[in-house]
Amino acid sequence: FLIPTCRTVRISGSNSDGRHMIVMPNSLLSHGDVSGRPLQFDLKGNFDYSGRRASFTATILKDANFHMLFPQGLDIVKVKFKNGQTPGWGQVRTFIDTVRSDTWSLLQKKLMDYSFLIDLVSLCPRIIRVTSEKSFTAFDEGKRLYLDNFVKSNIRLRQVHDGRPIYKNGNDEYLYYWAETGVWHIGIDYNRPSNGIASSTTNACPSYDSAWAVFHEREGWTYGYGVKVSSGDTRSVEKVIESLNPNKTLLWVNRHGSLANSQLQYIMTLSIIDMFMVEGSRGFWNLVGSGLTMSTCTTNDIDPIPAHEYRVRFLRMMGWKDPGYKSGSSCGSCLGNRRRESYTYLTSLHQRVEHLNQKCE
Image (cartoon, rainbow, N blue to C red):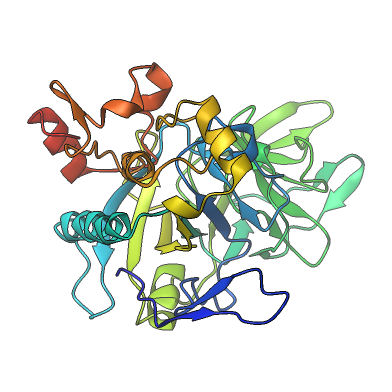
């Protein structure tokens, strides 16, 4: 397995209710002090089902949250396995094949209702410095901004922050992204757009090249001060995460189709968890819920659906349509043909090439 199962333990006793416990290595990243608030997801493939949405303030987010934050999915750029091989895009295919193999083993045991557990860390710098070519004074809501160094915070993100980190300095000033207007802001409240300092850009990190404007009551927004926002790190977030996680499979990913420059956006780890439920042991209400959606494998299914359909939908998150579940020439035929079923959580160059070659991708 991508993440091995070390032990499966049956819990005994009068109150155990036939439960089991799986013992496996910790698949979440060791973050050190560089990550800020990581984005962690439990994904099953049915983003259109209301039960797969969590509050954005929750520690673990779900499918609907992922779909809202990444409406075009994430693009896997390169992979590094725990054996220390040099990371590269060529290992993406090996990674996808490993997931296929793992889920095939689960299918042989009629297991279902498992999840991808994703731990996603922004590669934006931990420390941000603000400098300028000319001196100036900036205010937000009447409070002066002193613009001391900003540090990634652990503040829980909202959807409007678009998965980008929130920075804070010792003067309770914040550097944050506002997705509704596509602007990075510096101000005193990260829950609203600021009238302090801002940059209109879709850059994933505030330190990427962009023009920053200062707001004045009389002059409005002006770029005349030559404000620059840059990294204050002595060691990159990427290198720190790599060094802290030598025995984990790491993936470098970008927002698919949205990056205007070549910088990578996120590093993450991914594992399959909750490999407990056997198809034949579903309870009465599980069977009723599955029956309401005809036990298909579409994005609004009420879980848990049968093991084979479950694997089809699960692998569709990575763009693969199972040729073992086929009607006519349609691979993964239980997926249906509605447009929303075309959403791919984790795409890759390998997957797109296979699609162009009319494989089951």
